Length: 190
Image (cartoon, rainbow, N blue to C red; front, side, top):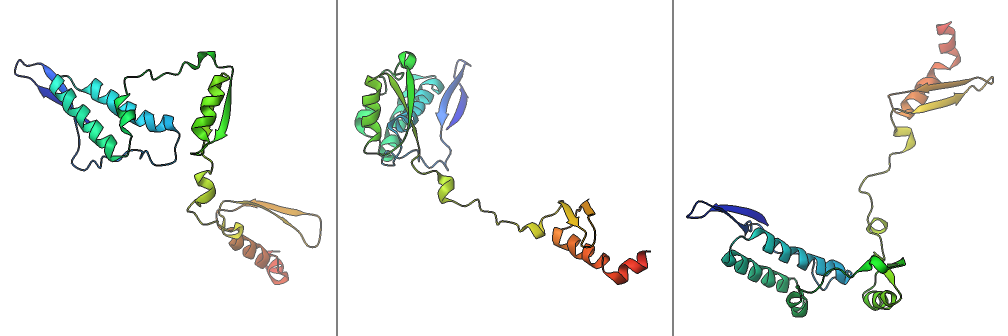
């Protein structure tokens, strides 16, 4: 949705909702497994935006019809679209505690209604977190390939330790250290 500003014949500014040609009219499909509050929220937001952004009755009528048609395409039931003027706030001011449950289609809404009778607010969380299914998309870098590391290398002959930070990979620095500690290289340094 985009706000369209236009000037009337009497030079007043009017606003209306404008949809980009590339807009897909896809919103949260009612058939998907989400809590009813989320599904209803999408409908509420679209209707509220239509009311707030339309400055003439004709624009409001046109946008309301567009929203209804779009919600029907996203499988919202007729009863939900028609009942948008109902009270939207459930009055949770008297709620004593809240319960967090994993959301399932078959038990979610019925358990919410039962818990509300006992003055408990129900908060749903996804049953399966997407992060458990999807990988991060990044390959794990082996420690030997890490750069900018601090390394501690014990001496093989005494109790001394070499501690240093390298900007090169750890494997490269370890090879250099090993090469530098060979007997022939120690003679050259001294």
